[in-house]
Length: 270
DNA sequence: CTAATCACCTGAAGGC
DNA sequence: TGCCTTCAGGTGATTA
Image (cartoon, rainbow, N blue to C red; front, side, top):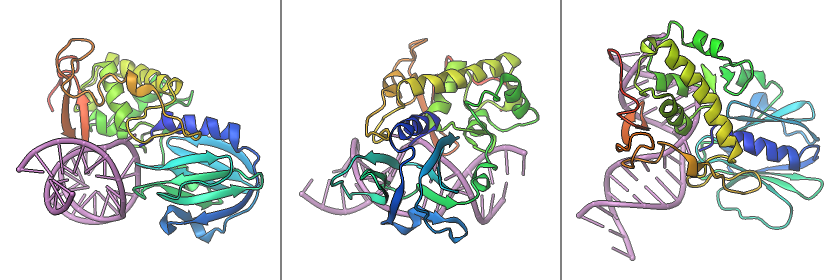
């Protein structure tokens, strides 16, 4: 479900609602949803820091970290008190103030990790796509010497952290690059266009509070608005906004991939 | 190094 | 109504 923009919106709301809250209890309703790294026991302390890296939400609780990855269907919802739905509820954290933090996850792919060493989870990841240090020059450096297809490269969090299926398709459309293009066939100009597309697309999606196609909700339970601004994703057979030809959807990298065959021609030998 | 497939899970939607 | 298939915003392991 959530990619970098959705996670960023959730993190911003968490900062407004649960910063400095003291955890008094953690209840696990589906055991696999909370991984106690090195058998770390839950710590009942204050949330001292809330940040994001790629698609990870990082809560610092006392001296340990609670990392959250929502995967496909996870939701992290702040509840102000009183009764709440238990449907698909996997973990919930209660605070001294009476508020609680609810982790819902129908498909059970999402994970919360309790660990003293956040780096163990974060260091395998590439640079965060919205890190100011992720520059056009850095992007070109990452691509140098690679020969995979650009879509699978962008989806691989070990290269660049944050993009998922929706925003990868959106970025490639914005840059006019076919998802199957070999990295070695990208021109300098295309690399520059793609770099700008990544920054702009992600920033725009954050401004719209993320993309709610089905079940994404912010930490306050609100829907995003960016679905109304998508250019190709979920627009199969609809006219391309640029050339009016129908948007195509094909199975690429084991993911549904949306693109305009006219505005994103496949160049070079593949 | 690259690519394809499977596994992890549940629910919604569409075909018949 | 109900059964069956397909698909979904993610990622790690395994296999060629």
